[in-house]
Image (cartoon, rainbow, N blue to C red; front, side, top):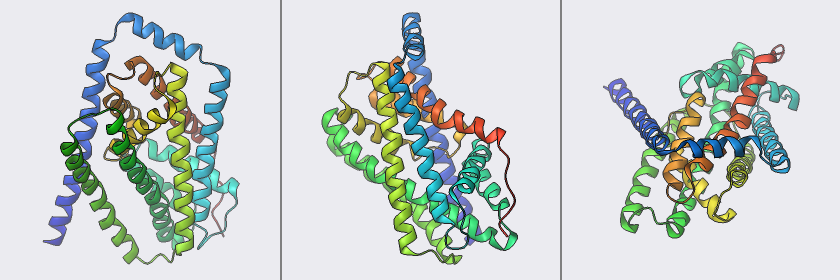
Length: 301
């Protein structure tokens, strides 16, 4: 009976993610069908003629984003393995490449475990979980605040309905996180509150960086909104994206759909799509390319 209930919960959570993905693809398809040839020409022109200063800023922010993620991994394994930044960087990038082509990023867990001896694999998997958990919580916290501020600036729906949907979505996302966290804690990784605090701080910093990247991307493409309003909208976009499938290969579709949903009627579609393409190339495709050309080192002794 327990196994049956567990499978039902997993299927329900998976179904929710598929619904979000389908909705995102529908929004993209509907938007693309309305674009004229002049819109595509403008998108191409903006991408090819982006100011070098802003592109350099985006590149540096992308490096900072991944640098923080590498520091997170270095801190997460510290309770059982002291690794230098170079090794943390290699393992993070290689694991990202594996997760890019596997559902729910399962490849990240499997590949990171291969970098360590068998008796440490259990700790590696749990460390990866506690490395990712604060990032999800940060997205929920900032996203919730962003959605509340965004609806006050750009009303998306009636206030009562907004509050109801906020509570519903928050519970749908938070409930499986709490359940999974309890399971992981029962497995017994000895991780201190200090380490969790460090991981959470890194997660906050990373969230601020990659959400600011999208703001800069929109600015490059000609965003008519001011930076603060745009930031609230971006946080709202990521709040929606949390419920989507954890599959890096589909990230561009989910991000594009949620961005179009949030900024629809406020920012022209070609500007939104241009910003999505810029961030996807720097944050996803570039590290994927790097993961294909570097090789792992030997395991820890």
